[in-house]
Figure 1 (cartoon, rainbow, N blue to C red):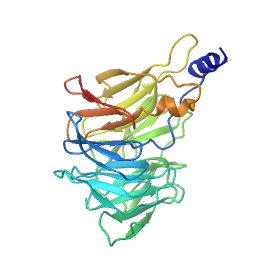
Figure 2: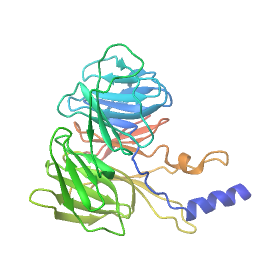
Figure 3: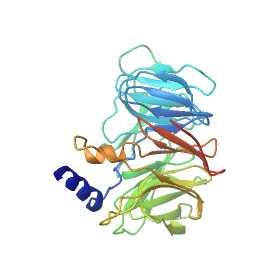
Length: 325
């Protein structure tokens, strides 16, 4: 009885806030999907779900895709990269990946990648290939003074982030530009790239989405409100994708959903998501959100939700589920 009461209180009273840094445990490449499993990186066919190959790299910290359609992952004991037409992943040495770090591709040179450390804040540049060693060498670093979370990587590789006065746009090898924007009682929890290089989206915790343009100063192109609070968000050049979670209400179960929208907020695809029922022994919040990672493909009209133990992929253009593993 006590356990059931505690579970009910958590479900009906506790808000689920999005993490400061969105977990990156799913990513699409060209015809492939990378899933961070418990102690390995699993590379699947993106439409059928069959396993192409696996790489045992320890507990996976983050995954990402390159502009060439390759997929790569950083794990506790090393990294792995699957090139677009390869059937076997190549290994590379371990990369330090501290809590709150973010893994990003180098959109100019696919044979390198970045790790962003928010505490400094610095962007470190690594090669995929190097001389044998226990750690992958840093080839360069770029400072982002004044940059606060959240951040996003724009289509040209520049970083946009929040600052105390508004927003900052800075290319790793280029100039920086700061833009003033009035503060809000509903601060941003996610920034997302738009199709244009000088535009991005700001997503607030309560579900307001702003479409901003940086050219000639900062201007608001459009805004819309989502039907529930945002837990995760992603974007490609055509649509936005969100994992939404309802606020707790007495006598009602918490509702999770996947929503894909046009850039102006018009719904393109929606699906209910299962809600976990943690046991008394499990850490409640970790168990509830462990399968709520989100990825959207830059190469096909596909979106995925899942975690280490399961993943579901939908074709949002045809509004149908492709597979569940």
